[in-house]
Image 1: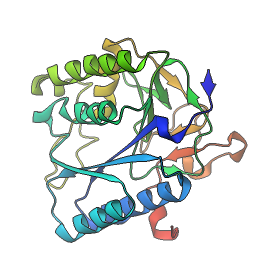
Image 2: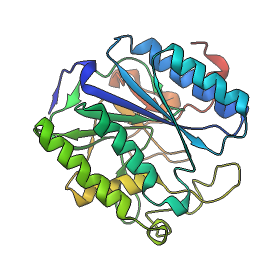
Image 3: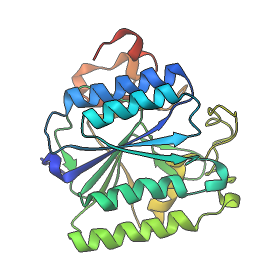
Image 4: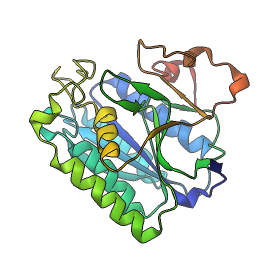
Length: 258
């Protein structure tokens, strides 16, 4: 089930990896599009920049936009490198815990908001577009909603701590299993090294605390070069579904001014 919500109850989380001008422009487009849609001053957006930073000018432009827009800006080096295992997911969960907000909505720089989500899930689970590899179901990372169900504020803090413990218990050896590294699909950083697939790591962590992967009717996300059954390509969205958010939009920054 789903319910109306107040923006003061949601922590939005956006991880950034800036290694090129294209990634910079896509990130700026994404943040500006988010701000255009989410105008409530109580909206909280945490921007987490992952390094190494190869373009200091790009970094300054992101910083200035965040500071001018009252966005929480953070930097950590190599969040999703294999040797960090579950640390990148742990950082995301820490942002949620520190926010003291009920829901966590993580999205990517090639995610597009058409409007504000009209409802949040009332049940406990991970919500969005459900995909699967050979071993585990997961929520496509273009938009993932973590919902605690009916937990009280104190219970939620404890619940997130449990998730943090599982994420931090992972080792680099764990990260090289099939659910940890998506066979090079995430080898997109400047050094062309393998990176942890945070979608699968978060799914594994969620599984340890009985968080099921469930669909959200306003979210339409798919992986690059993947067309799951009954999920249309986001470039050809059927507007009858009235999606609030879709993914991926790799090149919209070139044609849309926000």
